[in-house]
Image 1 (cartoon, rainbow, N blue to C red):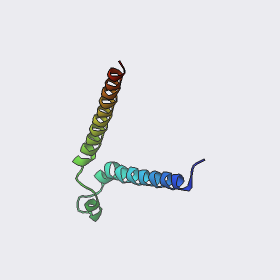
Image 2: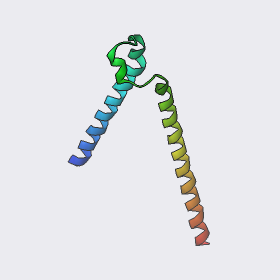
Image 3: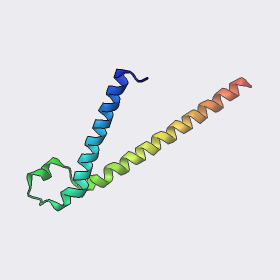
Image 4: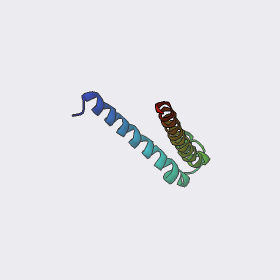
Length: 84
């Protein structure tokens, strides 16, 4: 059974994810159809970042996963040598 802290954290993360998804969706799908002079344009960074940010996030995630796999493999080989 999940505790109150777990539920609160889950609701917070789900809310944050929904907020980020909505912001990104408006930025990518709606903003190109809004005039450049509108004040709402100031709430969003330049559109090039709409492509660069997800690419950088995926690259960092893949690098982190690769680093974790290499570390675990190295540690496993290290412990198996000590047992011999």
